[in-house]
Each structure stands twice: as structure tokens, then as C-alpha cells.
Length: 181
Image (spheres, helix red, strand yellow):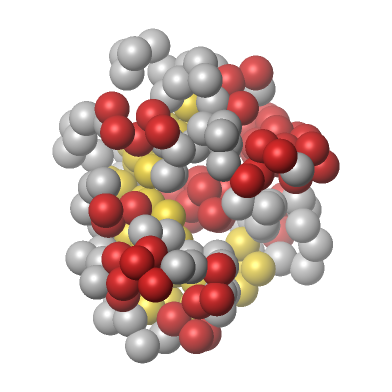
């Protein structure tokens, strides 16, 4: 894998509309192509999780690499099947070929950025605000806990991880990137 200094993770929250491309390597999730083109796309969900419109966007991605643990996406050019770790939220496998996972795709994207050698990981559009995830308290709590633990791990390895918006659910556990605001 290539080593990249700063990697932008692009989620689908409302703040993604304000994202300004600074030329960094970009890892997006799901149907991010409707807003921005990315270098790598992470898809953790199955086909059935997407509406026809969203599925068309995923199928027509311009990303060079598609990462998923689900081989049902293998027909996409650039598909790479990843293997998830044995337990959710378990960072003990991060230094292996396994991918720790949480309950949202941007977590896997951040793990991939680390595996690529990023020294800084900036999360954009990872708001987890008005969509379905905010309605599920346990899921929300799990996301915050997992990103908090990931940040601690990354910081111990000299890697910085920030979030782009004070409106993000993660702004309580990740520093907000003031350069973006």
C-alpha cells in the first residue's frame, strides 16, 4: 500500500456539502460519488441496504479501489475484499490484514487510512445527525466509543484524527479541524 500524509474520509452527513477538495487522497463511503469523486470507496452494507438510486451511484463510482467484506460487490472494477476482525470494536487486529469494525462505514475507512500510512485522518460529512443512526441510542453510543478508542490508538502511533464539524456526533471525542471551518 502507498503511504499518504493526509487522508480525507468522506461520509454522507449534511456537512459534506461544504467539503472543499484540497488534493488529499480521499476515501469515501457508499454513494458518496453523488457529492464528490474519491480514490477509494468503502461499502460495508449489502446491496439490499440501498435504494435503486443509491445503488446506481455505487455501481457507477469512479473510485479506483472498492473495499468491502461482502463479495457481492466483486463485480465492481477495482474491488478488493477485506476481512473484518473477529469482534466489533476490537482494535487488537489492526496491525494484521484484518480490519477492526464498528457500526458505520467511515470507521472502516479510517482503519484503511491508517493501514495506508496516513499521519493525519480528517473526517468530513461524518455527522451522524438527522439520519436513522441518531434515532438508535445504542448505535450512537457505540460509534462514539469506537471512534474514541480508535483515536487513542492512532494518537499513540503518532497519527492525528479530526472531524470537520461541531455538529458531528464525534466532535465530543475527536478534535474539530479548525482549518475547515
